[in-house]
Image 1 (tube, rainbow, N blue to C red):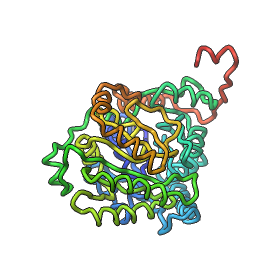
Image 2: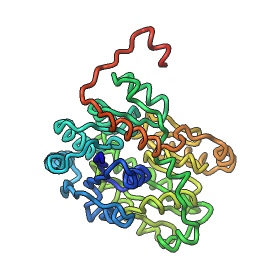
Image 3: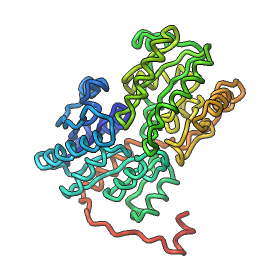
Image 4: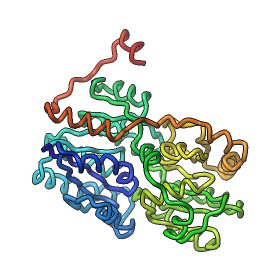
Length: 394
């Protein structure tokens, strides 16, 4: 039995990884290790490790890291605590492979500890571009530490190869999050309203807004502009999901609480809805607004518009249903107006999501089993793109 460690630090990340976790857990060839850290263990962010336990997956270790500050210094210190925790974890549990999804600072520490412990890494969602966030540099750093790469579009596959990774280690499998949209049995409106104590209308929007982490002190102004636009649209009912544990994330969450408190008749705010309730809520909404990656990757599969604000996700492959705009009041108002228009909503329902694949989690699990059977070499040879190779690859 090969020991596969899946690291998770956020509610959204776990929701995306869940189908893969399930397949590893029920595999006859692999033993699942779940290393839980970050926001999962924070009271402020809902102690979401309980969702993992409720789903029936045994947690191998809970690795504390979060300090009480969301300043750059506080986050950096939290990363240091986490690095020490994963150094100990790998020394004790010695997995044969570590699976890391994405680009958050929690996962950079997992990758760093695994690299030094000489444990192969399989990286999911590499090759993507997010020009407005520190996630950009973290994602590419994890790519260079990893031996296997599971990307979500062909463009991202080419980019990982461009970074020097061998083509036979880079697999375009589609996005795990889209697989969830296609396969999960969502709650109907009546069930969902009862569970989250919120009544939907045909004009309900879901709002998720995170700090743009490569900008200094812009969270308050940018989110204030969005709230001013939402305040103009009294016809809208609004669901807020709160920001992650990023620099200035608490500023946004305080503003959400204040706005929702003043508009209790049409607003509700949640620290964590969990995957099932979040996707069920998206299905009941007429648009998703903010700057979360879910608005770009998963939401288009519902056939509803996304208003993508600012630079946080700039550079990602986008479906035609995604309306990208600046962060001024006028720009947000124009984009939201387009998203709410009947003509655009009708067109959106016929659009294709570029992140859709087939049997994504099954493909990943199969490739991992095959690779682990023969051993995954730690040493990597840099792949140079010669002139004659460029045309065939690109």
